[in-house]
Length: 529
Ligand code: GLN
Image (cartoon, rainbow, N blue to C red; front, side):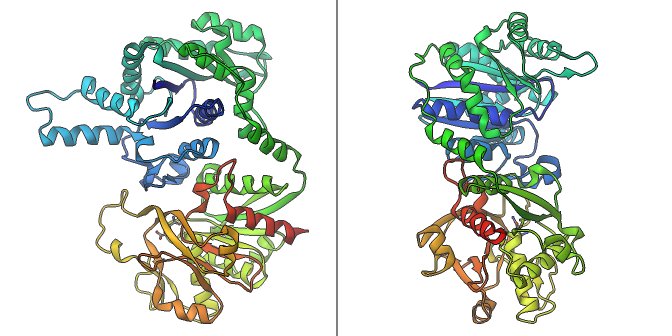
């Protein structure tokens, strides 16, 4: 029997609903249940693909090519599930489906309204077709926002229809007032009232707090909000987000949820591998400094890359200290000062002209000083351009994205992109196969000659130059078997110089960190010893 968990948030945003949803998923999996986690975002964009990372953080890409919210990255890293199109829903997607159906004549004769048509479409997506024990649906935004109203109405109806097959988990904030030296529960009480006003009684409350909450405070919240005491748990700030599931489990969150469903609680979840990971993370002392060269000075903009580096560090028994270096501020003159004492450099993905000359200078410095260098997507393209300019001596080499009329377009628009006019969802997206060259560094790292990795780009390595690159020391060691697109470049003579057109960061998980990140960090460690 399929059961449903709805996760909402109140008081303020950025409480970590995604982490809590992923933690619930992880704990249920560790009890042997199958799960899926999906995100409902109340904005009108069809997907976050066209949003500036400053607005929305990183855009995470699923294997089947959906551009999604970065919370999907947490879901995958925590639980190892592979999300698809269905796991990411926005108000835009809901309305588009309903309006397309209306135009098609599916509702002939009817007035199309938010209730029931929009809410029915939300409910259809919440219920899902797949065969899992638990469906966790996280609702983006904060309760009380105008945009979330139809989602709340859908949850209200489902809770009524599904009875004890639906549980509502509400995440709120308990602020600490320094002047009064007091933790305040009033915002939580108001937030729960807001939920009740929408007809939903939360079953479980997760209280985000910077200070430990006494049993008295939990008791107060429980009785003011009509929630059982065992169903009020706290989520304190922890040194690592990966401690959240264990912390939730210690307080009995998963057991409380199961009881609400009337499911026997049974044995404690098997979190052995997770505990092993946490132990490694807590005992890692040595620090390795890796430079992240990008243009968005915002933690969330390169979320999956940051997490992949840190996970790879843990399994290498080190702490990766990420030094963000804004590529707009890198010049030929100051690059040495910025990069010389780093153990390795990662050049980030991105779009557009801004900051690319700084990225090229960083590549040149790392290439000529034998500093481990990892380029991802635009980062790989910058490695290709730098090599053309400084080794092949094509001073004007560029990507057609930056200079459409460059005579040496070593990075060019993909053939299938030439007639694309719509911006949304039209890049080369999702997982594609890639064949690795036997004997190459990457083949050794992957331990395989066939891989599949996720993409998000419009431009590609221009194969007209391939021979010249190979003759001069840059090898194209990963190629798509169907269309010959170059997916990986490397310089074998260099200590570690690998550029990938794909995004390996999307498939690194807590229990299975990505081999390229593992090897990159390992080499950085050796470099810094
Ligand atoms: N702007 C480049 C392209 O579209 C790289 C994209 C990326 O880094 N994700 O090909």
